[in-house]
Image (tube, rainbow, N blue to C red; front, side, top):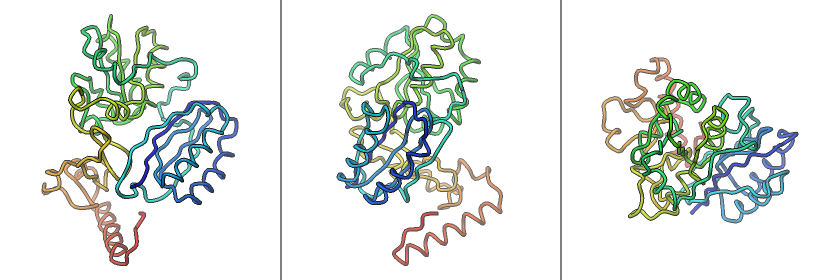
Length: 299
């Protein structure tokens, strides 16, 4: 079994690019794969490896400036869920496109997973799912509002167009691991919303800590790795991934005429040209040939 660690931490890095070489070297030495994003505002990512390797990486990251209190969430995978290791320099560790948003200046009230059900079932609370539409489609909390955004950067415009719906309401927000809510709750505070809350540790922490018999979660939680989704207890889900558009697929979606492995699914079949599909078929051919050689194709 591989240990999967999801982490983020907001801090001030004066030279984020200078942090990359040591992280890359450590991950290569320990056989860790995944993605880490570093920016002036902090670090974010998900990685997988051996217990020893993940512990070494977490120790290194917590020694970085301002990262001593960095928290992370763990789960397991039966197979390595990533093809390679990427450490990327970014403008933001989660892209919202709002330069005035600063989680270090203040966020909404943190709500522990064991207290979440009581909050969101209150009549004066509006619950907003801040994730992308394809994530919401496979699972969300009962009664949660879906903004139907295709990217997190669309959230501010959605709020501006819908804010009157939440007059005299307390607003509770949630996302996969908590990072988007650090920014979205700070954004709402800047927009004059006084009572803002968010699920501490995100959906992953809720599914880990709250017994399924007491849960108000319906469905599975999309994760950005080869497992595709997890359920209660962070057990690997049943979903597959369309390798053309990277959207999740239910088992029955694989039987639809629009589905072609690595080429298209019912969600993206009309989004790509025939030239695109020809390229995708060639890629899939190379993946199959690599498999016959006992190799793993990383394209």
